[in-house]
Image (cartoon, rainbow, N blue to C red; front, side):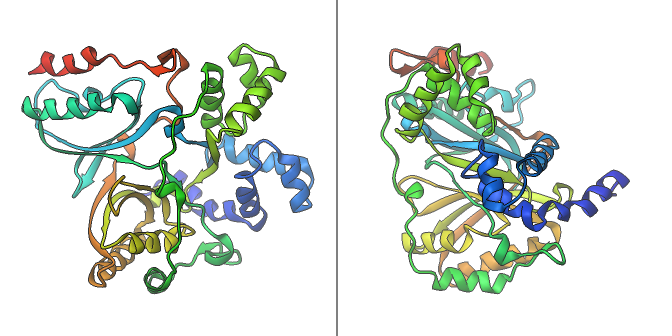
Length: 376
């Protein structure tokens, strides 16, 4: 049953997307720390823009984060679906956490039931991660697991002008048109889903700045400089000559729920396509839709891990559309998991610089493998 508090949120939520707010969301991706420029482009007073943005951020309705190219930091992006055996005394959510390289851990319900983990793990030591999972299976701790190396995420930003009715304050999705768009969209190249970057040079100050910008894309340079223990001038040098010039940060993402969270389920989908062309068509037809959050390609495969947010009244329509794409031989197969929002733990910061010494990330292999010995 929906509480009175939640009902008020549901009733007020569409006001989040009034016309100027939608434009502010879009411009925040380009100018997360330059509200004056946003105000200039929208011909609004700077203080009005600042007030709106801070109200939205402080209330938790939106979050502005830097999109980091982890591969340039020497860190791969790995996702794992884990089905553990029921063993008394083992908290598997903690067991498969490898500090400081775990950024996502949650329970999953449905076809992919079990646990879902995300790691930004040192590329030159990825063998340790793979060995850890295989040894856990051999020790009888797991029923099954799948682990993938995936690309840097391609984040979705919905096209308000196409899909949001500002008068009725609701999203309008034509599901048949979405299927048709997948069939007719010309092949679109998405470098984020095709190319993995080579490692760049960086230092501990760069990592400190990146972590703070990933936590809050609006953070002031003065705050970063104080935290890094350098002057503001020194911080600006690191940002423009290291972080920006080497594209360690690819841009900024404005994260928000398009629908009241109380009315939504968040899904993770593992989708296999009949060809690379069809995979890119699917992405091209979906990258501006409000129900998609992000795409990651499983490296070496025509397969995606994608996250979708769906209100209860659209879930059946969404899955019917996927079934049509299977029948039309665009999709080979797909598997679905519902993320348990109550059990979701997600951090979005790079590992602390203390783990990066002499140009390499530190991984304590014996500590990781000893976890298995202690319980088997």
